[in-house]
Length: 337
Ligand code: NCD
Image 1: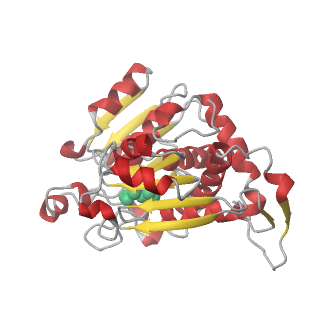
Image 2: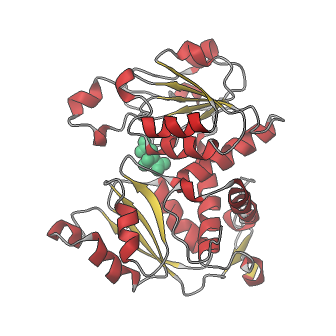
Image 3: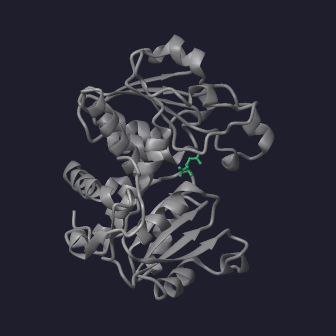
């Protein structure tokens, strides 16, 4: 895949070689993310960070990643504060905003909206989540995390058993991650959800075509030998009403007791975050916070490395990052990511 100038809209764009290349570049971003060194390879470049849906991690990590490469960030948050709420088309918004920036990261509640926006853009566009459809940068950081966690336990992706649990219908992160994992051999998927919130047929078809073993169930007990447990949030904002979402909230909780009872020791716990910590949901209890297998914060940290790699690649500077670096002036003692 030729990254320079490319949009990143869907995981369908990637093959295993391009993923390996992204991960190699991400590894090289460690010293900057750890604040041992700083690079100014993107000095003068501007990121348009357009978030038309709530976001903490994705938005801030896109901005941080760009800053860590020496670039600057212009941000718009919320639909109400943008001219889209005055009826402006995505095309017009893209034509205008793309002349103010060198690259755009965007999140929007409508499926396909980021691709539509990209048609009007004169600069590369990175999809930060388009409705229930896709979240390609999250899938890359999830896969990067899975590889690292498995390597820590002395295993690899070959023969991976992943269990995905919760809202698999509206959760875009599990859609993109499943499609990405379908590229690897011998992956076993256990998909646990209420029947009404099952993984969409379009994603299942990709897994089936690639010959993977898929178990669809509403029983947590089916997942006992999973290597990775990927928990998700009920995507309340995609339901017709809060009452409808409430029917499912709390159906698949995870706490220390459930984890010990249903999963083998060392099953890695992942979640794209935010976790819904309200008592009625509590999908990932705080009593797991000290469990070393809880990878959720390592996962979020890895997001910066992956997004730095994608910016460096799409702006064509991936091989120049080190030419513009120097050690930092201030005290920094951050651990390895
Ligand atoms: C996810 C999202 O927005 O799709 N969050 C994220 O980007 N890390 C998951 C969610 O909101 O539940």
